[in-house]
Length: 406
Image 1 (cartoon, rainbow, N blue to C red):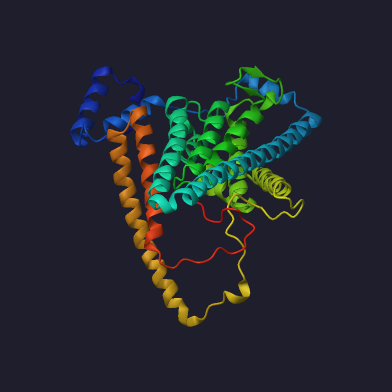
Image 2 (cartoon, helix red, strand yellow; image 1 turned 120 degrees about the horizontal axis):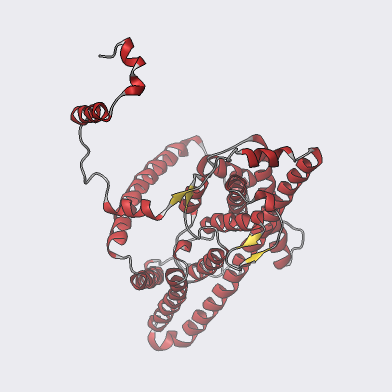
C-alpha cells in the first residue's frame, strides 16, 4: 500500500526494489503464450517500419517556418492546388491509356478467336477454338504475372491494402515508386485482356497514389532524377496528403464519381483530415474524371460529348420501362438476403484460399503457374457456358464492337 512518504521517495528507488516490483507484476499478470503471435506476422512486422507523420518541431524547423511571410505562404498554397490539378490530369491520362490499350488488345484477341471459329467450326466443332481461347488467355496472363512476380512484387493485387497501410503510417518499400506504377499498369492491362475476373478500378487507386507521390516530391527515385521543384513538400506529412488526393483521383477516374473519391479517402484511407484537404482532394477528383471523360470522348469520335465519365459503363437504361411495383419489394428483399449469404460464403472461401496460397504458393514460379491455371480454367468455364444456354439470339445493332467480354 502506498503512503505519502512513498511518493516523496519514489525517485530514490533502488534497482532491487524495481526488480522486486517487476517480479510481483509478473506473478500477478497472466503470462502471454509464446505462440500467440504467428511466425509469419513476426516476419511481416520486421519487414516494415513506420512513417513520421509528426513534424519535428526543433529549432531549425521553427526558424524555417518563421521565414515564410504572407506572400510565400500564398505561393505554397497555390503550389498545393497546382499539384492537385496535375495529379488529376495525369491520373485521368493513365486511366485513358489503360482503357484504350485494353480495348485494342482485347479486340485483337476476339478477332483471332472469331476467325478460328469461322474456319474450324465445320471440321471439329468448337474444340479448336476452345484450345486457342484458353492458350491465348493463359499466355497473356503468364506475361503479366511474370513481370509482377520477378520484377516488382509490390505491384501485385489491387494495391488498395498497401495504400491504406501507407496512409496510416506503414512504410512499405517501393509502394509509390515509378517502377511500381509501370508494372501495375502493364499487369492490369494483361490481366484484363487475359480474361481474368479482375477490373481496372482497384489498381487505379494505387496508380493515382503513385502519381501523386511522384509529382508532389518533384523527383523520381526509379529514374534517379531530381527536377528541383516542390522541394518544400518533401516530408512525410505533405506527401501523405497528396497520396490521399491521388487515391481519390483514382476512384474518380474508375467510377466517374468525384464525391465517391473524396469519401473513399475520408472513410477508407486517410488517417489525418482537415477542411482544406477536403477541397483539394475534391478538386483533384473532378480534374481526373473530367480529363478521362474528355480524352475518351475524343477517342470515340464524340468530341466534347462527355459520355465516358468512368472506366465502368453499364450502358443506357430506358427508365420509363424499368419501373417496379410494391408487390416486387419482397422479391428485392429475398434477393438481398441471398446476396448476403453468398457474400458471407465468398468471404469464407476467400479467406481459406488466401491462407492456402500464403502457405504453399509463395515462390514466384508457382505464382506464375497459378495465374496461368486460373486463366485457363476461367476461359474454359466461360466457353463451356455457351453450351448451357439454349436461348440464342440474333446479333443486334450496337455501337460497341464487343459488348460482352468474358
